[in-house]
Image 1 (spheres, rainbow, N blue to C red):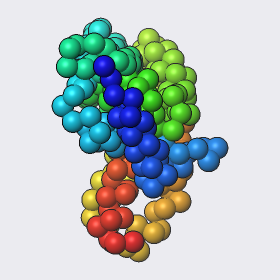
Image 2: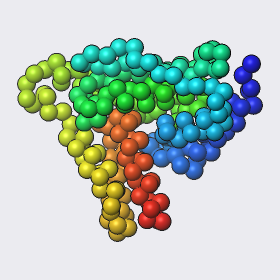
Image 3: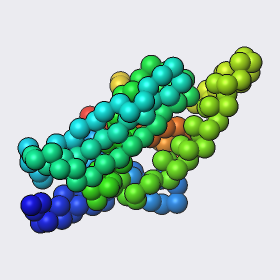
Length: 207
């Protein structure tokens, strides 16, 4: 039988990570990245539970991935499902499957009680609108409609910037960074990438 104390310990650990490493979103709520929640899951449960993902649907338009969290006997204790639209962002032009796996894992962990702050974050809810826009743009073959949101290039540029910027440039880019992570035009995967790149460089610069 599941050890309830372990689940409580995992929830407490994620709650602490949310306080110490969570990034403030619109409305003042904090989000804990999927990678950190998986680390908390592994630290608490070790090999007692596994995270298993599978592609439910894939074609040239979209990807759907399901993630199940199982015990040693194969009993599913939590499950999550996510969809990504190919070509909707720079990331989804090349890594829609990987992005979808991350999103599905995040929702499965939220079902287990290890949420990023809320069961559905503000960014996840806004992603619904972004996906609808992407589908309309993909269906429309005109050049103007095909060239969706240039913010994707800005995301990639900002991530590259944090690879070798100095302390002064890091500080000067803070306002731009805050605008980017609070943009309604980014995916959860892009959000995680920017926050990770930002926090890693901050530690390297000992700020």
